[in-house]
Image 1 (cartoon, rainbow, N blue to C red):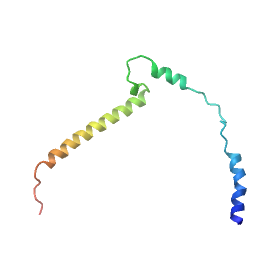
Image 2: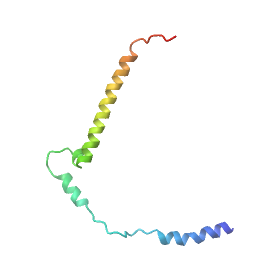
Image 3: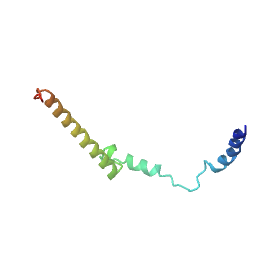
Image 4: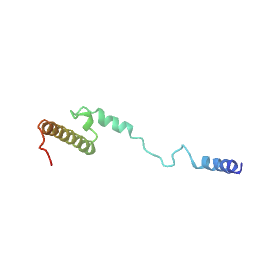
Length: 86
């Protein structure tokens, strides 16, 4: 019973510390991002985010190409009999 009462006494304190209002005023930059992404400049949408998007895209393409080459190598290697090891 004492444990329940102790837990209940913590509830008002937890409610006091949590707040949904923002303490720091943050600037809404959604409109700026929309303008940048909707600009007709012949850049694909997956690269309009800047340098970070280009790095992520290139890394993903290199990993996909490397995985494809590795898969073909493993299939080629598996298609021939392996020498027996004694």
